[in-house]
Length: 393
Image (cartoon, rainbow, N blue to C red; front, side, top):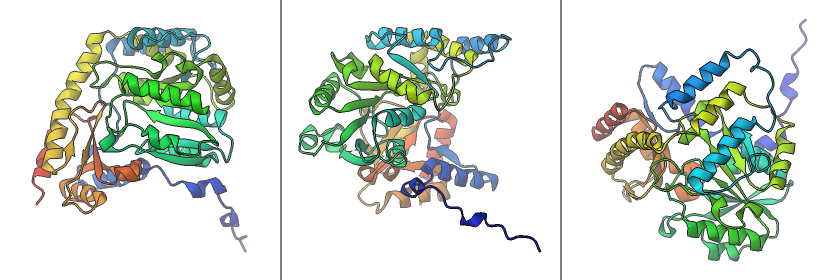
C-alpha cells in the first residue's frame, strides 16, 4: 500500500496570518481569466508605464549586452557609473548634492527597498507610522517583519497632508520610521517645500526617521522637489526614487535610495545578504536614461496630459469629483453620495462595462469612498473605456 502523503501537516509561518495576497496579484488573475474567456477587459488599474524608455537607453542596453565581460556578478553597491548618474540627476533636477560613493544605494526597485529599510531600522514589536490612504506594501511588509503599524490620517479636507497637530498628540515613544509618499499615491497631492520642512522638523524633534517615497515627481509636475533639499534632512531622512515611473522602466527593476552614509551602510548590510548587483548592461542603460533632457520628460507628460483629460471624462461620467491640481500617473476621485459602496461601483464597471478601475479602499479606510484610474493606458483604449462606461444604465 502506498504510504499516505503527510505534507498536509506542514503549516506556513505565523507571519503570513497577518497579511493577504497583494490585491493586484489577485485581481489581475481574475482579469486575465476574463480576458481568456474573450471579455476584452480594459485595465485602468496598475501604474505600469506603457511607453518605452528613450532610444539612447535601449541602444546602451543592447550595445553593452554584447560585452563578453559584462555578464558576471556586479557590485552590491551598484556600478560607479550608475551611482554618479543618480548623483548628477539629483543635483540637476532637485538641487540636492549627494556623494555618489557613500550617500546613494541602487536598488532592485523601491519595493525591495521597503524591505531593506524596515529590516535595517525596525525591531519586532517597534512601531512604524503609515499613511491612510497609502501604498499597501508599507503596511504588509511591516507586518511580515513583526513591526506594529500605526496609521496616520490623510484627508481630503487637509489636502491629503499629514495633520501635525494630531501627530504631536500621539505616543511616539516606540516609533522608528514614518513612511511618506509625495507626490502622493493614490491621491495625487503634490509635495511642497513647507511640507518637507515640517516633516524634517518633526523627525528631528521626535527622533524618528522619515522615509519619503518619491517616484512620481516627474509625472505631470512642473517642479520636482526632494525632501533632501531641506537643510539637515539627510541626518534624519531617507528618500526612495525609481526609474519605473519617471523613465518608463517598471520591468527593469531599478531604483535607488539616498541618505547619510551611516544609514546607507546599515541598509547595505541588509541588502548584501539578500540579493546581488543588477546586470551591468541594465545599470549602464539606466545611467543613460538619467541623462535625459527636459524635452524628453515634456514629451512623456504630453501623453499623460491627453490621457488625464480622458480619465477626467470617465470620472465625470461616473459622477465622481476630483482635484484638477493632482500630479502623478493616476487620477483619484470621490464617488457620488448616491453610490452606496465603492466596490459595488468598481465591480459593476468591471463586469458590465468590462473596465477595471481600482477601488480606493485597498489603500486604507480613508480611501473607502474613492476610485483610482491609471493613466498607463493608450489614448484609444481610454477613449473606448469611456464609451463603454457611458453605456452603463
